[in-house]
Image (tube, rainbow, N blue to C red; front, side, top):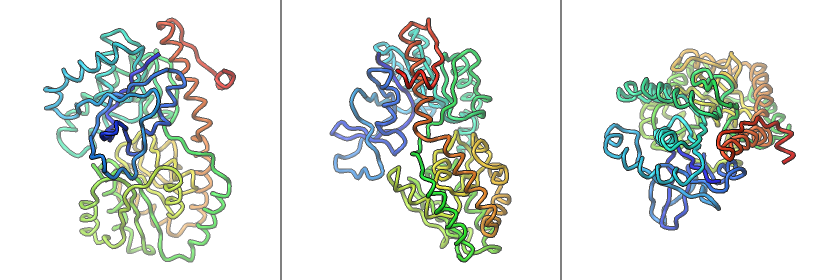
Length: 411
């Protein structure tokens, strides 16, 4: 069986014919689906790079039984009017040859793929990884705010009519985008390795030693493009708190141009306290980076279930985050603030600089919570879901089975 997977993710490719991702969609992700389907066609956006271009920080997405269908972006009004017909034509051809569609939402290409699947009578499943409303409303311009209610209504309709829906949250996205008649599952798209107890031991030792330190090292991982990660909120909170606590060092890891954020930091009087450190390969390099910070912050305006937050928790990091998306499902209420709430985040940072007992409590809690997101545990849930969808597709929609973990392991 063949399946079309559709999303707005931008892949990088060159004359070698190989496709690379910015880290979130390596070939290992496609293996989740290839355990059920024979072939995968990835409908996506693409950016051609020179053969000699530096692809440091990118991960290889190409591999056996995976093809890429590069489509124009539909994320602006002009392209929606001028290129939608061309995109539909290409999707009709690809989906017509496929047995099913998997659409990662919210995304324009994903939504168009579902629409074509419905027209052609092909079964489809959706993966809900974020909120369409939050992403557009907080994008930072009037166009996004105007389009937000349209995207919300459309995405709700697509999910409501799906036969299968996989959510990255336990509650948040399920409530906002219900799938009343479909088979649903909660399964984060974040995978972390099994972590040894000594990671927590080292973290607790670091917290204890921090009582003698003159610097609180705060970390954030997120793209510098756009404003949804709340980098400005973190900078403002640091500026507000810095006079009442030890020296802060704010380390930011992520792709994009740091110039405007550095300019804001300079304007706020904290320019010398901030370093923008680019990107690192996913895995050990990121974990080592997280081991070098005292507190992780995720002051986002929009999230599904943030990968970086769970990775930080797996290293025993105390984490301060907003109430956006599924973040409240991860953190203790004492570590939360409403999106944009600078004053509350500033007070939490001051507490993190002085309250060692509270930091230890959060480290232990977060480390234990993160074990719900280890690869073996999530793989079992995900395999059960996709095996059921595969059987549904194979039977022409006649069979919809709920697989247990034990049944999957026995197959």
